[in-house]
Length: 415
Figure 1: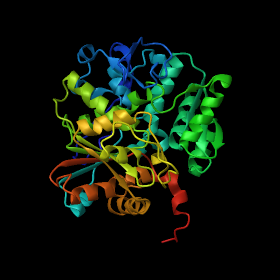
Figure 2 (figure 1 turned 90 degrees about the vertical axis):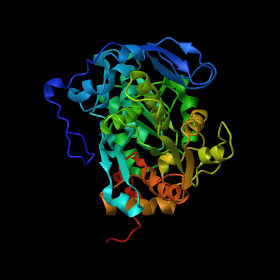
Figure 3 (figure 1 turned 120 degrees about the horizontal axis):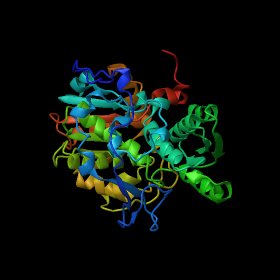
Figure 4 (figure 1 turned 180 degrees about the vertical axis):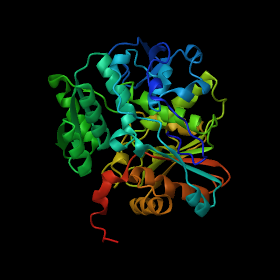
């Protein structure tokens, strides 16, 4: 039972139906997101020869024969219910901790307070390891296992490292996590307890990526960084499939998404494109708004300056560790998506983020991560500016649990 919309409906999944065999392998090719060069599937791949990310292309006409909204009713309540549009061919390679199919919560009290008709929070804190990063790592580690890779590494602001460590432990693979020295303590301890080797680096996630690259050839790491391999985005895109399924086949009017590396936002757009080809939806799309922190807002600046790529932010800082990404590898994709969706980009201050964490906890009983909390002040500002209409169906994404950020409240007096 993983409905959570507050509509009173429920989906039941008897244990006998919890299997992964939902149709044929439909991967056609890996395609460069910039130059459109194609690569054969089923091989170890990182970036295109031009240096840009590769994306998985499926035979969606074939997938549509079995992947229908009605067919999903008796499938397992995990992201693997969408097997026809996921890249893992060998069922035995699947590494799962029950990720996906997180609640879509109808936040009526908050909606009434804000004066909006319909407001949902897609709560990714219900995932294994407490964040949406579980989705991407479940698929990436499963593909690594299928391809025979043994030693996986990632630069991480915190949550991706914990997720990689957990899924690598589940798969019996080695995990190496390069993490900023000032990353949340919970993230470091989590990765260590799962058995990963954690390398602390002075600086930001970009410095961690540099350190990983320096050691990669010598130590034989396979880099599962954001968009440096094609499969994490495939796990993230299932958030879009779930959203449409949980809304009864409808597309929301507006989505606010906290954006650091941007894989989730890219995955959402990919999901909507695929769902149109599958016949689930028409040409309608939600307006997508990227939410960043004022101390690290490269996408916001590039969007408002009309640029197609973002410049790196010097001295990036914010309490929202997942938003502290000075420059995203997929910046050109993010900016294109925001413009094609007729959405936008907005930055909020750290104090606004703190207050939003308190407000979501008090009004809706949601202890959200600072990245997810950033969406609330962004929504308030966009409503005030007339960018979002109160009668629209609005979805905020909470990408993780606030329990991982207890350090933020250590100086707060007890209530």
